[in-house]
Image 1 (cartoon, protein in one colour):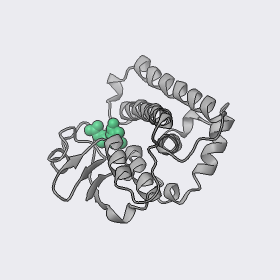
Image 2: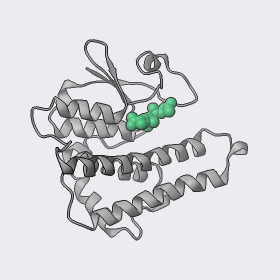
Image 3: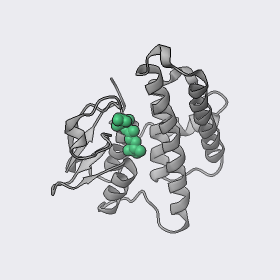
Length: 202
Ligand SMILES: N[C@@H](CCC(=O)N[C@@H](CS)C(=O)NCC(=O)O)C(=O)O
């Protein structure tokens, strides 16, 4: 199977961290592609009409997207650890994944606004709205991590990839300020080999 991939994508990172944690990284061929919302890349849209990464192309040609579907697919075929729990714990893990992914959705929109949109067309209130979503999600992450330590599950992986993306693209937001529990948790989680091997770079 081949993963349509961008090294800077936090959603791709989520898939790769899960692949490392479940012992499947070697089974995935990496296929770097350009993924920019203002350009249709034929290498990607032939598999995924949304033109986004990650997209996982299986050996029979079936394309799976988005990152949540790919993560669940890989988890289901894992012969080792599983990161999508069963029972009550599942809903908590999925909700934490949704929160982290929502933070990333706002961060990506902010990134596109700052990098892609012509300066004359920028809209301050819209940018402030995305920053507010990021801050709200961070506050919820802080409150959650101040409680009992969360297990290694898809919620933790998504949260770590979201915080890592803020470090990568938005150091100016200073997300650690006033959020000591999240900062300490990320410091420890970030030492995992799965995180170290997937650090984003331009
Ligand atoms: N909900 C999707 C989001 C994927 C996404 O937005 N990926 C970005 C790269 S980080 C992308 O492909 N952007 C290109 C575009 O929007 O056309 C997921 O979880 O996989």
